[in-house]
Length: 186
Image 1 (tube, rainbow, N blue to C red):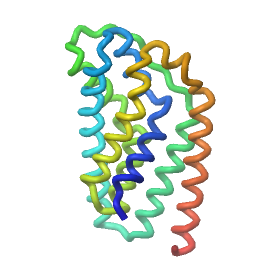
Image 2 (tube, rainbow, N blue to C red):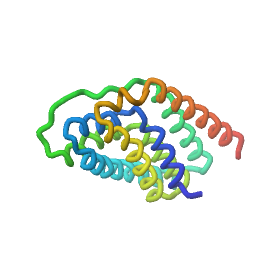
Image 3 (cartoon, helix red, strand yellow):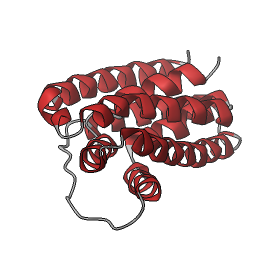
Image 4 (cartoon, rainbow, N blue to C red):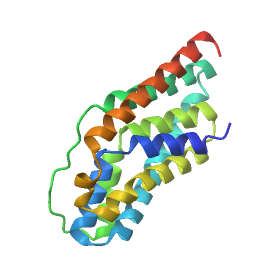
């Protein structure tokens, strides 16, 4: 199976209401340059996803397919639980040019985040790190487009208090299904 679509969908849903999306909204509102912010985000998403995918493929070569499927289940469950934890962004001034600032802030926000963990698991399960990284980077970037375009209005326009728990429940259900399939030998 091609990991591009599962990585894209997982990243698209996992990014909603996360720090990266809030940082993109804040930077776009402050600068009025959503295009540059999205370029910085995409480069950060690509770097973060490439590292996660490479690590997932490396680990996958040392464990069984069943164990890697359980890793996918664990990543989905982690994404579900993390969806119930509220996110905030600290407002701080930066004197750095916009593109490097967006790259660094988004990369820092994505390090160890649920999108990165899901990318790791998908890349390992399907043994295709390049496609998993590309799908995750595209999904994360697409999820942040509304934040970039709406800027400060993003948090008011999108009901994140409703979206995050609904997506969290979907991740938990998907994680339980994948885990039960892996444990039953399917």
